[in-house]
Amino acid sequence: MFKFASAALAIALLGAGGPGVRFEADGVRVGDRLVQGRDIRVVETMLVSGAAVEPLTAAVEIGVGGSTLVLEPGVRAERARDGIVLTVHGKKWIRAEAKGRVIFLANATIVRATEAGWDLGGGRALEGAMRVRVQQDDPDKNLEAMKEAARKAEEAMKPKPPQPPVVEPPVPPVPPPQPPPVAKKLRVRRVFGDDPVIGTDPGELPPVSPFGN
Image 1: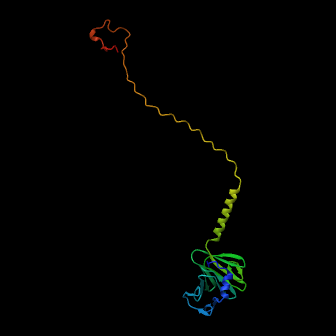
Image 2: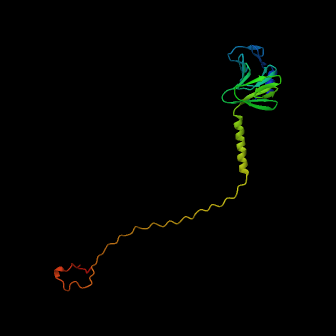
């Protein structure tokens, strides 16, 4: 609910008696209290040490030299020799914004306060007060996903050439099953061109069926 609180809300809280936070040479000042040392402790609605600030429930405006840094919950600002190190929990990104311009930063990026605003390294800069918040996803991957979705939508809108109708080949009829063939009984009949009885010894005659077969 408070994760994406607006800059106006953060400033209103400070104006209504909320803690004024500032990085100083000998520690971090929260209102009238100067926090020193390396131990992290809960002060108001923040985690604070002598060199770091991380808001827990609402955005916090922090003075760094002549510049202003607005931290949203989940982003930690820690003083280093070369500037302020911005970190977030896990493998996430940091979204930095000022005067409508947005720059995505990798985790543990060092930024430097200048009179004009913030030097983010690599020739990148933001003028004026800078608001930073957690970015869940890699912005480059999000951009590629958006481009791919747009490409697919464009392809879907293009007219498709007519396709020839699909003709299914005729299915040949299946013949009905046939009964198995019946084996025929073999019948043997003796056939003689001449009468075998004439001129033949009765003992040499072949046996004759009593039925004439």
